[in-house]
Length: 594
Image (cartoon, rainbow, N blue to C red; front, side):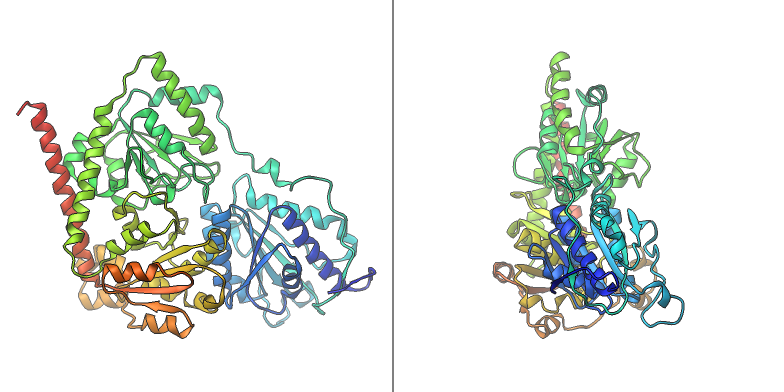
């Protein structure tokens, strides 16, 4: 592109300058990455993104991959990514990622190119109705129309407004539908002057709700001196995606409560009274009696465990939820108090307030309560180790434990991978887990992991074979990307999670396999090698660890059996229950002086 004098009659030049101005202002607001799907109508903005030295541009051959990669980068950084596609059905392939960004609170600038008004509704090729096509899944829809020099004074304000809406007051996607008229390539003329500010307009919109001192004190009085548990999910320490802090672990220590730490909470770390195997423990009927809390404090979104949700619904305890503004998590309709405020700020102030209440009331720490939960955690951990140590072949729970042990950052698919990490992985040094749990879909997992790795560096992408097949197009060119993405696939030739559902035992095997099992018979290793990726097929723990220790893009495939996987999970749950029940019996005998 060259810089020339303004030409009031050149739409091409106006479009080029408009796009360069948008990108320049977005960078001033903190935008650093763009993910582009190739197309003609989006040329003006694609060229502007490529021309800016401070924007990292990644190109995906299909729109769904580009959108999910943008989602992953924004998820990891907390800053909006730009995703860009051409007009027509291309824009529809962004929709799944837009919905996930909406439900997970991830900032995203969704740019769809479009035809100008004169080409709409006249049968022009690659033209559909793109006006508000994502409905309520976006924080704002804007359609500035074909750029003209007369509106140049509004361009920077528009760019600021777009970023502001992605970040607050509730973070999420903004849809920018950009009409471009041919010719699509023009010269960049003088951009409008920069705005006189030190930051974007987003500052006043991203301010999070702050509880009053009285509200903090009232909450402290509700918690102090009672037997409770903290359930920490994604968003347990502040910003809903990607920001982790010590608030949950410190509060648990101050209260002398056990902390049920979802891997996505960032709180599952060595030290403190972390309960990693809560799913197995609460399956014990004895534990439901002896370890029944008076109060449950939920932080952020709920873990994947359905059993934990059932336990919380059945125990009849008071339940309080602290979550970020604009979010709401109560699928079981049991929360009595919703505290919608900045989570990190609330927890920080709550720690001091609880300490003050305990001191003023001379409340003694209830060490027995947390000690019982600690014992139950140790019994559950021992049971898992004993069962898995008897397995001769690699198993899905063992893969989950290995991924959690070897990596500090992991993108984990919904279905069984996120559950196996949650239920069976050991407490470690602070694994950061990302997952598309807003809508709980399995599409775009590889692409999301690529986006996460573009921000976080070395990243494991842990998923099942169906999720892998969903996103095969994102493997294209991965071998040439300068990213350390290590993909781990548990291949049980179908939809493994369905084997855990009632359908597996109620309907006939043939019907089940056709509708739910969906065996595919695809040579996954051949697929990976076909796009130039290093591929491993380990058959034991040592080979798995070796494969995952190799840097750079790779695919590791662990072949498993759906039927054996169900039986193994049953054995694990039964072993945990047996050991926890046995420990509780010993408590009872000790209390009776036996």
